[in-house]
Image 1 (cartoon, rainbow, N blue to C red):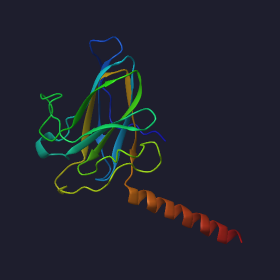
Image 2 (image 1 turned 120 degrees about the vertical axis):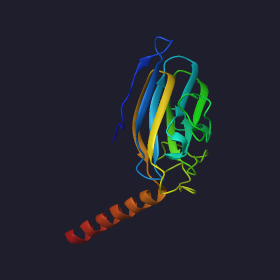
Image 3 (image 1 turned 180 degrees about the vertical axis):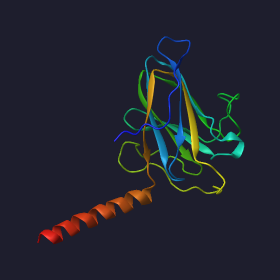
Image 4 (image 1 turned 90 degrees about the horizontal axis):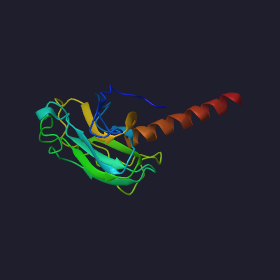
Length: 183
């Protein structure tokens, strides 16, 4: 099920097909991950970054880039040099030459790094989970920007592995109780 979070501001950039886009919203919990699917129309360098750290008012983001088949490309912890006018010291971002196609950009909370050996589309979380060093004062508001892309949509959040296991256990219990009642 697709869930669109936030809003999109589309301003045409120098290329006829490329647009500057912004999405924002809230991450549900410290172990959750925002996944944004985006398309690149022509082979070019694409920039994707966060400006949500806000000098410590929000969380320290980790970003990662994934191919259309869900395989890992690259990850970044701190890169506030993509748009210094809006980013602060713990913001994150990636500038990468990409061929035309579909990609995924993820945002997670520090220390929830991507496990590069796992596929984001595999149905299991490719993230390590956990938020070491999170403070109760940290907000979970995110703001992400894209430059050099044709279109994008926030599609979902990857829940923490413990939530996946709890959901599976609940569904199994529900199935068992249904089976028992019909006997």
